[in-house]
Length: 137
Image (cartoon, rainbow, N blue to C red; front, side, top):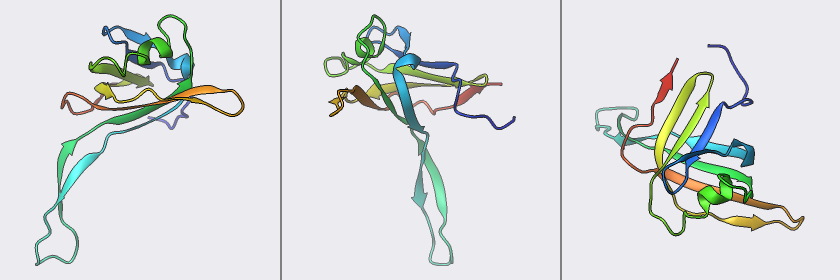
């Protein structure tokens, strides 16, 4: 596979509170996600370097964007975060590979900047214990 840029994400969707995926790419200005693994240090006194075991997998994401109150867009998707306790599927896809995770969003903070910009930074974490796995070609 060749090196590519971060341009041209083919999918960035998030379920609304009723479980319907919404394509909110147009509202997202940038995002960050991680798929870390926990480790357990198991170094014996007979070692001269650290020894570790891989443990549980995890997923976290922060979606940063511009407020959009149009139907099926970001505000409609995230405005129910404070009042509903539902896992939402987040689907990221690029170059034929997809990462889909059941995610609990924990906040919907809106920021009104000094220049008048109205933005959000929505954090989410893995909900269901399923290992985040890239699928596709």
